[in-house]
Image 1 (tube, one colour):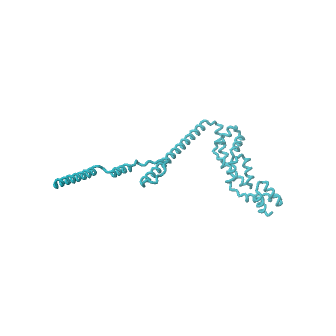
Image 2 (cartoon, rainbow, N blue to C red):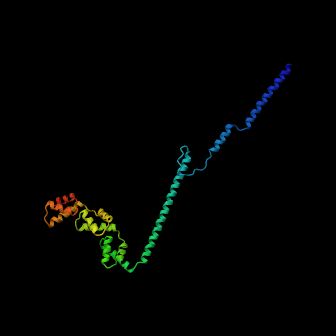
Image 3 (tube, rainbow, N blue to C red):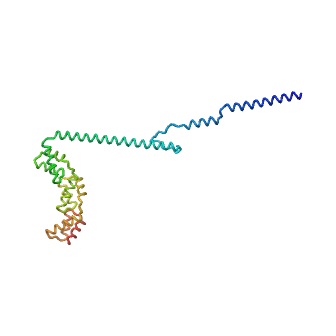
Length: 253
């Protein structure tokens, strides 16, 4: 009986050992859950190349390489856009220049003899003295050109009317003193526009205090004045009260 019991216990023990060995063999041959998770994580870490999207904000969690690639893409996109805009602007400028040159050729080809002569005379006048556009038209009409031809000659004389206003203002100041308001009125009389007059006044280089001194001296050199009478005369000439008093003081009144 004892031998039989021992044999049964031995068989049970062997069965348990075989069961444990089988379980271990299955675990070694099958990938574990943790290995599968690691495999999935590695797959997810693979990303497509970085492409620049101007509307996309920088990713705070992006790697250093990704940030560098995105910045390089942004800089390149800006440079390409700048080059394209510059090329387009240059082409537009060249096209406009060609069109203007062709228009000028067409104008000259269709020019009448009278128009050509009016243009030549306008240029000749501008060599010796400044004119407003309206003043030059009147001068050409005085020379016998029709209003249309006179206007044509002034238009294509090549004059810069702003510069003409500046020249005329300086010329007037060479020969006689003016207040600022007096010179403005004189340029208006000569036919300049308000913008041209302002340009000329701003660049004529006049010191209005000195102009008041010169005019006060010119008056007292030719006639007698009281202090108040001379102040009134300078005010009439367009000087400010401060300029008029300065001018009168300069001549000892």
